[in-house]
Length: 108
Length: 446
Image (tube, rainbow over all chains, first blue to last red; front, side, top):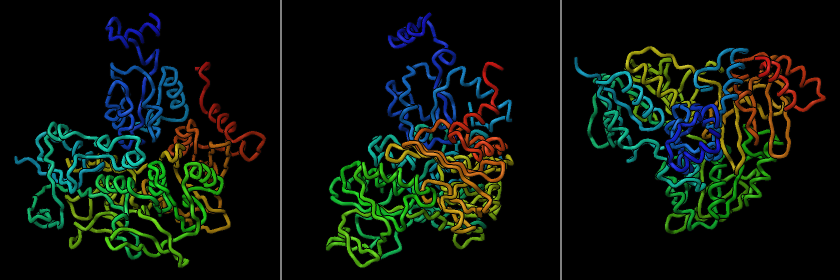
C-alpha cells in the first residue's frame, strides 16, 4: 500500500491498516534534556496530542492519532523535537559505534 | 512498618520530578508537596512564550490536578518559614507544622529586585512567576513606554514580548554589547539588527539609578546615572536571580549562594535534600559547587534527589552547560565554555550567563582559541582547547548543534578538525562536515 494511501486512510479515520510510521514516514522524537515543558508543541498540534508529555520524558511521539504534520517540531523554541526517519536512526547508531555510546537520552 | 513521610517544599521542576520519582520507587510512602503558589506545576521558562503571545497562559500548566491524585501526592498550599531539623518539622507561615522523615527543599529562585530606590512601585515587573507574568501582561495593555534592564536571556525575552504587544520598548544596557557575557561583537550585531527590525530601541552604556513614581505609586520615569530622566510606565527587570533559602536560616544546614549539597543532593544535615535553583551542586567541569539555573538541570536534580530519598544511592553528575533559546525568531544554542572577550582582556574570565541559563565560573587559559564563521543570520563559534572542543555557540541554523554537543560532552579528540581549521582554505562548516564524515562511516560502508 502506498504511503499516500495510508495517509488518506488515517486522515479519514480508516483502520484498514496501521502504517509502519517509524519506517516509512518517520516519527517525532524528543531530547528530554532540552525540554522546558512549555507546551508550545501540544498547543500547535492539530489533533490535540499532548506532545509535551512525550517530550519531557524523551519518548517518541508514538501516538496513533499523529498525522505527521511536523508542526510540533517546527514550533518548539528549544529544539527538543526532531523528525526521525528510519535511515537517520541508522546513521546515529553507526556514529555511536564509532566514537562510543551516546549518553542515555541523547538519542532515542 | 510506618510509611515514610516525604515532604517536598516547592512544586516546580525539581519538586514535582522528585515526587514522581519517589512514587515510582515507594508505592506506600506518604508524599506531600508544599506549594506557595495556588497552581499545579507550571513551566517557568514557558512564561516567556505566554508574554510573546505564542501560547495562552493556561497552556503552561504541565501537570493536571488528576496527575497529583493518580500519584497520591498531597498538594498543600502554604509557605514554609522555618525548619526544625532536630524535631524534623517544617513550620508554615499560617502556624501549621508538617513533620517529615525525608525533606526536599526545592523552593527555586526569584528575580532579583533592582538595587536602587523605587523598586516597590507598581509597574516594576518581572518574568518569574505566573502571577507576575499576568500582571506584566495586564499592565502592558495600558503601557505606552517600557524600559527593560538586564543583560541576559530573560531581559531579551521581555523586550521581545513587550515589543510584540505593541509597547514602545527601550532596552537599557550598562555596557556596549548585547548579552555581553556570551556574545562576541559579530553575534551581538546580528541580534541587534533583528531587534531593531522588531522596533526595540537599544540604549548602550545606560544605567538606571532610581525609579520615580507618580502620586498613585506607579512608575512614571527612571532617573539615569548621567543625571537625566527617561519617561516610562513599565520597568521590566531581569538582572539575575536569588535562590530562595530563607527556610534554612537558623539551622545547621550549610549554605553559600544557595544550599550546599553533596553528589547525592543531600545537605549537611542528613535527611534534608535540596535540588533545583535553590541548590548549589558539584560541577565536575569547574570542580566547584555552583547554582545551575536551568529547567532541565532542575528536572535532573529532582530525579536524582528522589532516588536518594528512597534510599537508592544515586550520584548526580552535572552535564556540561547547555542552553537553547529562541529570541526574536532566532534560535541560539550555547554550550560548554564560551569566552566572548578578547584574549588580551583578562586571563580569569567570570562568565555569568544570567537568567534562564547555566551560571558558570571559568578560568579561561590563554591557550583557548576560537573559530567563528558567519553567514547571514547563521553563525557558529567554536572554542577549542588543544585537541578538544570545549564550547560552542550556534545561531540560526541548528543542524550542527547536536553533533557539536556530542563532541564537547564526550570529549572527542578533534585534532583533525583543528588542523583543518588552522590550514584555512575551506569554510568552518565544510571543515566540520568533513570531520563529521571522518568519524562517521558513510552509510554505504555500513
